[in-house]
Length: 159
Image (cartoon, rainbow, N blue to C red; front, side):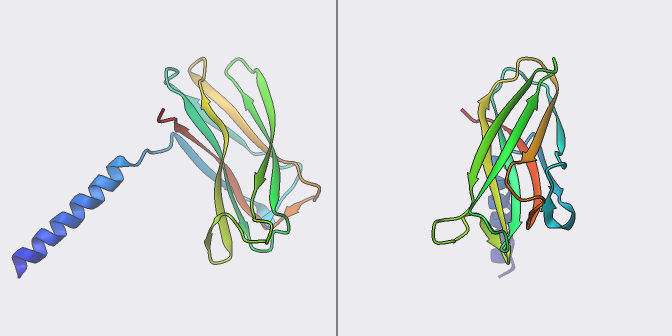
């Protein structure tokens, strides 16, 4: 009996090790909580991401969590990328949060819904150094209520 229990525990640990070793860790993964669950036009969080390996391609994503009181089915965001030479690239993005019937598309935990949306895929940084990434809400509401937190995720592109 004890032998079966030991071998079962050993197998469980091996499976856990296999799954954790196969998962890629993000180079950068930050969530910024929003005060009073509202995102003001004036709040444009900056994220400083250090890139060391310029031979790789990277994916940059938006981390977002909102509660079930958010009143829109989408979100418009302005993304700014400033490179090591201070050259800025500004892009506008629309992210779909719900189906036409109102069902949230994010993964839910109680009344909070989480998303990771691609912003830039397969980007290759020219020089090693610190890159500034900035998020700005571009909706009509001031502040945009019921947003719990926002952030940036940067990871190596597997392809």
